[in-house]
Structure formats: C-alpha cells, structure tokens
Amino acid sequence: MRIITLHCDYIKFKPLKKAIKAPEELSDSDKQQKEIKEPLVILTAVEKGDNEKTIKELIEAIKKTASEVKAKNIVLYPYAHLSSNLSDPTTALEYLVEAEHTLKKEGFNVIRAPFGYYKEFELKVKGHPLSELSKEFRTESAEPGRLKDVKEEIKAKTGKAAPNTLKEEKQELMDPSKLYNKISQVKLDTSKLKENDHRIIGQKLGLFMFNESSPGCPYWLPNGVLVYNELIKFWREEHDKAGYKETMTPLVNKKELYDVSGHWHHYKENMFVSDMGEDGTYCLKPMNCPNAMIIFKSQTRSYKDLPLRLSDTDRLHRYELSGVLNGLLRVRSFQQDDSHNFISEEMIGNEYEEIFKICEKFYSIFELEYSFRLGTRPEKFLGDPITWDNAEKTLKEILKKSGKKFAVADGDGAFYGPKVDILMKDSLNREWQMGTIQLDFQLPQRFGLKYADKDGKDKVPVVIHRVIYGSLERFIGILLEHTNGALPLWLSPVQARIIDFTDRNTSSAEKIADELKKAIPNLRLDTDFRSTTVNDKVRDAEILRIPYLITIGDKEEKSSTLAVRERGSKPKFGVKMQDFIKEIKEKIEKRE
Image (cartoon, rainbow, N blue to C red; front, top):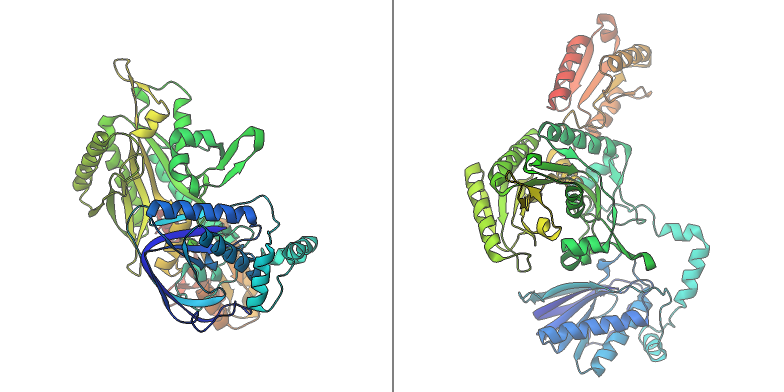
C-alpha cells in the first residue's frame, strides 16, 4: 500500500463518470460536489498482498500525522496511479471502507471519496514541512484479510459478492502465461504526447523500451546501447585528459555504510532495501559518494595526492513512486558521470574553475544553453551553520568570477553542503537540471578522512561531488527531444546507409559498402537492398534520422562516384569516394 498525505486548507471533489465496470453505487447526495475544510487528505493505492496488518499500519500512520498537524477531518481518496501493482477493485474498496469505519471509531470526521469514478478535484495544500508526505506499507503475507461486516457492505453497494482473491492469485501462479501478461512490454500511449517526445523517438529509432517486469528501469536496445556507450567514451576521453581516475564500487552495500554517511536518516525512503536476516540489511546503491570515501580512506594520503579525482559511471537505483515515473526523464535505474574530487580548502576556487571548463566543453558540443543555480543550506543539514555560511560565500564568489548567469535557490542545497546545479534549456525552451557540483565539508569528517599536509599534520580534505551529464538516461531523453532524434553523426546508431537504385546496381553497392568499411573500420554503416522504390528507401532512412544516405545507380557505377544525401539537405551527385571518406572521418573525429 502507498499513500500521499496532504494537509490542506480545503479539498473539493465531485464524481464525473465510471472508471471501472462496477463502481460502488452512489446516492444522489454522493453525486454532488463536496467541500471539506481543514482536511488531512489521504491519497491511497491499495496493492496486491495488502492485508489486515497493512490496514492497521495505515490507520496508525494516519492517526500519527493527524495528531502532528492537529487535523480532525480525514478524507480517504482512492488514487490508482500511485502503483502499477494494484489490488482488485473489490478488495481495495473493502479496505478503504474498513479504514473509514475504524477511524470514525477513533473520533475522526471521515469522508471517503467515491470509489471507481473519474473525479474532478481541487485542493490547496498548506505550506508547512508536514503538509506533503508519502509512505509505503509492505507485508510478507500475500493473503488479503476479509471482515464479514465489510464484505456484506460491499455486496450491498455493488450487488456482487467479493471474489476469492487469494484463490485467483494462486491460479495465476499456476499458469505462467497469465502471470507473464502482467509483466509484458509497456504499450506507449502517444495520444497526449508531442511528436518530438523522447519516448516516441526512442521507439522509432529502436533505442529503448520499458517492461512491467521492472517499472521505471529502461531496457536499452542495441541502437540505444551504441548511443549510451558513445557518450561514456567521450566522457572517459575528456576526463582522462583532465587527470580523473575511474573506479568501480559495489552496487549492494550494508545499511551501516549509509548510517555513517547520513543517507539512511535523510534518504532511506528513496532506497531499495532488503533484509538478509542474520547477515543484516542491504541497500541497492542510490549514490556513489559513500563508496568514494571508502576508497580515499583505504590508504595513507598526503597533500601530494591532491587533487584526487575519483570518477565512475556505476549504475544507481532510487525508489521513485510509480506516479512520477516519466520515460527516461524520471527513472529508478540510471547511470551518471560521477566524480568525487578530494582537495584542500585552498584548492576550492581553482577546482571549480576546472570543472566549469569541463561543463563548457560538454554542453557546447551539443549546442546546449546552460546556466548555474546555487542551492543554499536546507532545513535538515549536517554540520554547523558557520561552515555552511563560509562555503556559500565562497561559491557565490566563484560563480560571479565564472561570468555565467546564476540564480540562488534558498534551502535547496544537499544535506551535507551547498551545491551548484547546471540548468539547461532544450529546444522547447524548457529548463532542466542536469549536472550538479556540490561542495562537501561533512562526509569527509563523518568517515574520518585525513591527509598529511606539508608539515606532516593531519588535515581533513574537502570533497566536491560533481556530475556533468547528470543522469545519462535523462540526458539522452532531453537530447532526443532537443534534436528531434537527429543526433550528431558521432552519436547516431547508424551513421550511413547505402541503397541501390535498382536490382542491377546491388552488386556495385555491396562493393562500395565493403570499401567504406575497410577505409573507416568503426563506421556504423548498413545497407538497404530491398526490392522496393528508391522513394521508400529514402523515406525509411529519414524516419530513422540517418545522417548520410548513399545511392548507387547506373550513373554512379559508370563514373565510379557516389550520390550522397546528407540529413536535411539535397543530394549531391558525382561525389568522389576519397572525398566522402575524408569528410566523414573528420566529422566523426571532431564530434561535429
């Protein structure tokens, strides 16, 4: 079960039309708009496996939050979009009715929004820290509880007896084909998407897909892996030049690691956690910084080792609610071009300047506009305010010196230090946070990190957490929309395609393909020798956004030349093979 609790000034709602085949029956008064003032609204998703224990935990959580915000009016609001693992409607209604009855006995004024209907609603959330919370309740038992009086009420309202849900679930487990239908490929509904939506482009170009076997975690297809790897290859080359050292660290870590870092206290709701019994609690890695601290501490360090720039592209997992997942832009599994730069306090200004140079290199190559945003001390933070004030002052001076536009977002820093976010505008003028550069005085202290200065005295290093692409998934999604799928030559899954004008030109076209592959071994080249029209072949290449289309016809065979059509341009005839090879080689090498 998952809930979002909203403490509101008011909520208004009205049922409009049926959302399921057999919603609960409503009286005339139930069909009218209702307005409740000063409510605690509980958006609730009942999931398969919820039982009486889950309901008790729900009620206790509601009582606790209601006590904290001093709310007496409770609105139970069914909200299916929180989960992709919803229980059957009859069970969900049963549990909501049960929660309603129990809370009323506890002295609350409970209003339950109609179940099984599309509703219009309006609410105004209060702005205090407890006004927006999310919780999840899990249970080991898969057998849903049933209360006799509740079942009778459901039957009275729907006219049907509650099904034996447990029996049905066991039957499904006996039939793998039925079970697989629940984890089939996610069908993309394009009716409300713009033509350049990255999900549409990704489907057309065969880059990635999603499957209910792992919601929010992309399946990267061969063409998508090519794009992914090219971005990482570029990242490796540039960071190697800048003195970065790449690492790889465990994807699963004990909870105690995150106790030390502070993430368990500040971030555990967004982590995938597994209780391994006597072996303790383990977490899928949501970020790389604690592991980087361990590497730094693994040996004796001196001032001569600084700056020590430990980079990585390990896969990370963060538990996002189902309702906020959004293609590649908001996922649960991703990689980012991470680095943790260990420096002395005297190095802060120079290190930020070097990082800004990398930002300019990476964003200019994609012709992306960007600016900076300084996030200051949040409400929950580690360390002392004086250290924070000094760090924020230092970053403001560095940003002013950079000459780039920057804004200040009060309270938006990481819990361990202020941060500089990289904001990018796409082709639709939408602003996205991509990379981030975070100054951290806290984690090195928590992990007891030290280095020997020139006098042999122990000092605590400062660490800069930084990513430039940010999430590679998000970066690719935005880049696809920014370019409308017309990726630069060096990134395109297929860089060139050869087509024959007629069947009699096929043999010559095959020879041209072999020559190009020998001249440019890493060229991603394919051919289209189908027995169809040239116009069909050209159209298909345009749909796939292929940068170069080479046509071989009778004229090209006779003159030993190429007809070359560059994406978005008119075809050029009489192009010599060597000239084409030189042009495409230079563009790929320069990443134009």
